[in-house]
Picture 1 (cartoon, rainbow, N blue to C red):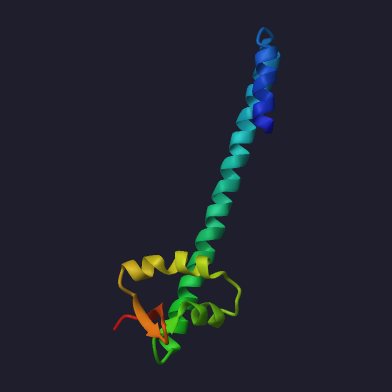
Picture 2 (cartoon, one colour):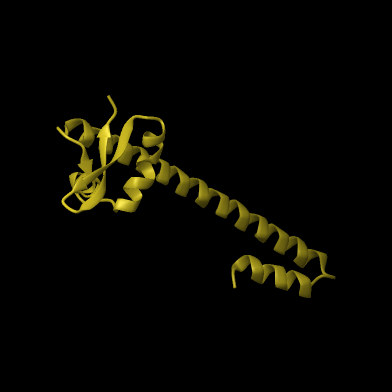
Length: 118
């Protein structure tokens, strides 16, 4: 049970007492403000991290002499990020044409390779 739910239940119990209801409404409003600030901070952090991943990926792909696999791209970032996180953050670059994503055959396997668009 969250604090908000707890305050809502108490508010139902003390419905006749205006002082308690006003206090609980104020506490619920404070929780909403706190949650909004936490969400904004989290979004800001995620945006900054995503931009760093995109810039790093572009630098690695520019330095590469050939299209590289996702494993090589993540490895070039020092293993600081998961492959899922890298794919999520470079997807806008693929959609706008900055990075080209192509299928390649390596041995018997078909894998995706990434390169800077020319």
